[in-house]
Image (cartoon, rainbow, N blue to C red; front, side, top):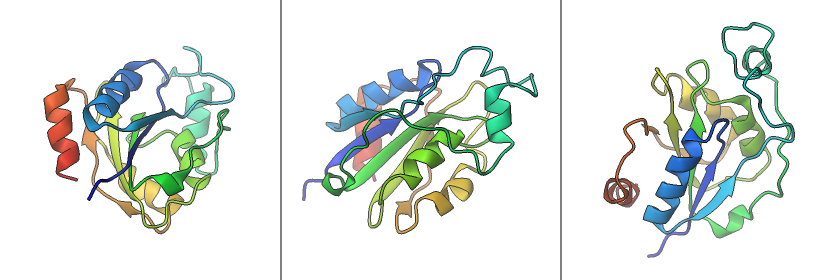
Length: 158
């Protein structure tokens, strides 16, 4: 049985985008970039500044940054590989915006993430409420710049 896969990703600095594009090629998947209506600047991403945009968003569990693009037709997909940078040991709030904007009932969602220094933390625990009816599998950190063959093997195990 052939599975239809979507690689959906958010990348504030381009790091996650590189992995997402490589993963989509390895998996033969469609690619969708989760773009914020207001792009993040370097100042927005300064986690040491309590008044930076990312800090304010991550400190507000109800924050849902607006997505600019039309959403993909989730009815076409069986598996969603969901990529993002880790912010404060979890997914950025824009990932919740994406998950809450689509019906993922019966879909398999597998997170993948990049980070300068941390692991997945409580990512799945925090994301679960935003994708009711989906099967949310454990994610994978992609800081090691995996080869296309490694990525293909990872997707085949899903």
